[in-house]
Image (cartoon, rainbow, N blue to C red):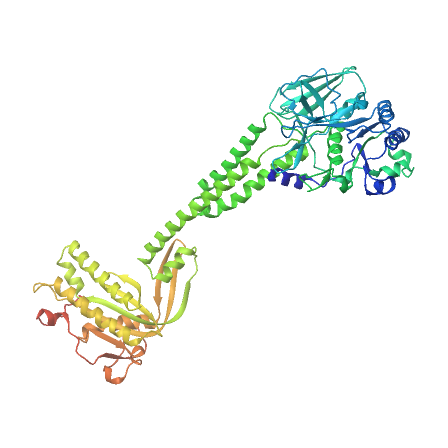
Length: 609
């Protein structure tokens, strides 16, 4: 219901040249003519004044259920002036009240499909039996809002027209026959009241499944010319304003209680609803449902499903994460726009709200599931990237698209480079499986030691690794990492060697300084890298561990973090690839090497590492 009301709000606001005129029983009239109900003489004078003013029809949204003086005079006046008055069958509940006598049944119609039903009634006194009547019974929705009125109601086997329908029949002013015709095509109303005139013309009034007429809320209340009853009686309305108009007399004063909720307003005068119904009938623009409304709704829903499913299937999984939540908003808006378009342009009411909500929920559900799947895939991707890249670099790679430009920054780092000496000679005499097993254990245990002490593995290449720490890291902790790394890996290498093999050992170099950290390469193939003299220096220090027979060598950049007593100055060396000599340091205390653990002597193999 709320959906349909919002659609009315969207299409409302236009001004139309409404056919009926409202003559209001308003506060001004009550102040001048006294409290309601007015005397029968006053109402008779009002009816006659409408004739004098040139009105072609007069409709009273009023019921006269109680006998009063001058009832006969008023009834005679209303009959002479072809006026129409109201009566109220109870169609919104099982009412046993029966006051007055219902009149004006349509003899040519029978209680059947296309006709609503009512039980009990509030009608006029017997004095008004020969006056035209029409019922003012609304269809009250579950929320209390009035959106339609039964055009025809069956009470005790007789069919009675609504006030607006009776006004149309009186306005046609000819002999006519009435027929209820069921829908002949998908775009016809479920039922149509066909009015066949004596001159051969036909007027069609669309009816709903229960014979209802839908109220058009697509234009403003100001579309109706509205005047006060007292202004007409006192000659304050120019005669030409009512010339050839159908005038509806009804209460607008709030104290009279004829106030009803509508899709546009929480309180509207009941006479306004009658005016809206009569306007659409007189102008032949009645709002209608169509027999194929369900098929149209299903077709639109299928198109929405295609819109929901096809684009993500074409664009891949990445686009679905944002696509589905977007469609949860876009699809209801599109269906809302379609319903508003049908209503304003074609006067057709489509019930798309019941389809829009499930589609929106389906889109949200797909969005949640896709987000969850994407998160799981992203987590797996991140875990995979972390196995090959430093954690921060892996997170950046997982959350952004690669480019074709250099993406690198200068950073101050402590670097540690470790490499297995004589590994090439070892590899030449062992099977690939044994070699791979040794490398796997070396890399696994080395990574665990470095990461346990806060380091980051920047690069794993063959039998060597490059790790880093921020420059502000605890220097003693980094040096302890080098000691632990050498001790643990020496044991691994000892177990893997034999007297017949070339002895294996681990060389470790440590240096501190500025490095360029980032990625280079095309967007299709990026490489994480560390560049700069500090990187060259730490690699050369590791290589010199073999020449100087020292397991761990330290560069002068990192040596500044320790007292002179903790290190052994080995002198200055022009390291390959560097332009200036660098001082090289070793640890002052003894560090056991793998050859000593094997009980053999150091052997330097030409061409080995």
